[in-house]
Image 1: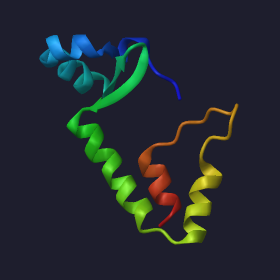
Image 2: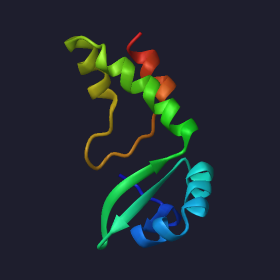
Image 3: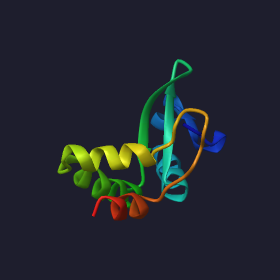
Image 4: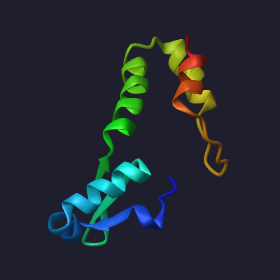
Amino acid sequence: MNILTESIVSNSDMIKNYKSCREKAESLGKIIVMKNNQPDAVLFSISEYERLSVFIERLEGLEGQDVEKVAELLTKEGKLKRYSVDELIDTIK
């Protein structure tokens, strides 16, 4: 998983500056909240959440063969390739 440095915020920063963290999530799609130097939570913008929800709901309704199709497309370790949610959904239609 690639994480942009600018998308990382500390737990204390999140508590003290929620509004600016929320705005950062809106502009970047998501932010990673760190606690004790470990990932603790992810704050998604509502638009990113809605985009991902469509895909997640679609995955939940898949049968075995369709899940295998999606799994074949997804990144194998050491090979980074990006797919849009729409591309993955088109694969399982």
